Amino acid sequence: MENKVSFRESITILIVMLIVLGTSVIKFGLSPQTPVLVVIGLLILWAKIRKSSWDDIHNGIMDGVKNGIVPIFIFILIGALIGTWIAAGIIPSMMVAGFHMISAQWFVPSVFLVCALIGTSIGSAFTIISTIGIALFGMGTTLGVNPALVAGAIISGAIFGDKTSPLSDSTNLASAIAGSDLFSHIKNLMWTTIPAFLISLILYAVIGKSGSGASLGKINTTLNVLNSNFTITWWAILPIVLLFICAFLKVPAIATLILNITVTIGMIFIENPSTPIKSVAGFIESGFVSKTGNASVDALLTRGGISSMMGTVSLIFLTLSLGGLLMKFDIIQTAMQPLAKRLKTSGPLVTATILSGIGVNIFVGEQYLSVILPGKAFKETFNKRGLDNLALSRVLEDGGTVINYLIPWGVAGAFAANTLGVSTLEFLPFCFFSLLSPVLSIISGFTGIGLKRLSSSKKSVKNSKAVTA
Image (cartoon, helix red, strand yellow):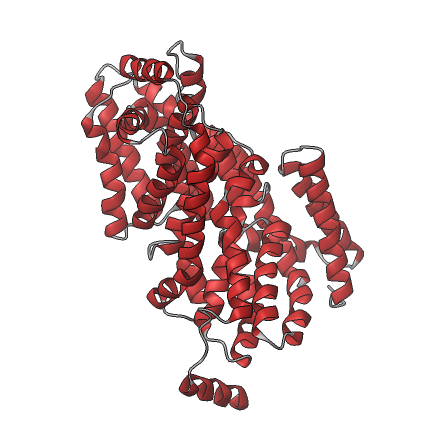
């Protein structure tokens, strides 16, 4: 590009993007793929008017997409995992066990707690939502609880676990971008994370209690259908235990999922040795098709397979392409940098960083970039204002990764909606943890409560480095 993009031009581009995406998805109810593709087309047209070469445009797309190759592969494996877990009776067994263990009266807060606890151990919100989350969602459907409320509790618990686990890639990313120690970062997160957790729990207990009048007859009917049509056994816990073991040993997600799928396929053949290989391939490719004769159970357990993830994969590809183009032409960087220079006190600085993370999620739909871009733009300003890197890393999480689940065209939001079968805009009002985290972070910025500041020794080191530079 011959001329560098101006601040006014970058803001105009982002506003047009927001209007196109917001109007298409919220007003007209379109799937996110088409609006994102339209925005990409408009951005390419703008780049060509600015006399950018096709090589620059292609390189921007490739630079964006290459960062998502591993997540895309993980989503494909998760689709295969869901299909095989249902076929092997793992998810039905979790549902049966859950009906006997979880109180119907306190079902929603129980869902939030279970997902938060297991999520902290595993460190992957996507894994929680697509495995235990599906089982809990099925239980909520049977109990007659609002599906959007159940989905919100599942996603909130999964996000809490992802945010507080040292095994989480997003938590490690926020710590690395800010230059803070991982475990110190997790400890510092508690200033906003614990209040958000407790308030969410209270809200789920109050709102969820209204769904306690479940029909015992409906629950018994569902239990009978599950017991009659699936292998319900104690050893269904084996793949779940395997997830914990792999997390403890820090086995990468791809290896963990492949191993789990392999073990699950072995369970299918042990339970039913005559299962055709073609059927197992169908579970992996197209998902499991439930044929119990019970409409609600069949609707719930007909899911999974690689093909079920293709909508999410296509959206990831498009949003990463869009992000790559915005990065290539310095549009988002140009929009954020002047703001960073004008912020003189902690409150407005924290607020601006939070809003920048939310903005990147809205404009790009990619949670990693919502951490990387504000982190790079505001790090120097945080240090100049006497704030420790731990303050920045916490703000990046509070305004970045947790918000992506609330964006219909966001990678995480689309994944959760596709997996649970509830649209993003439906479960958004009930994702209390995601909604509270940025609010509490902004309050911390203005009050100074829990806001980590540079010690005198660190401040002198930062100043000497600035002078040297």
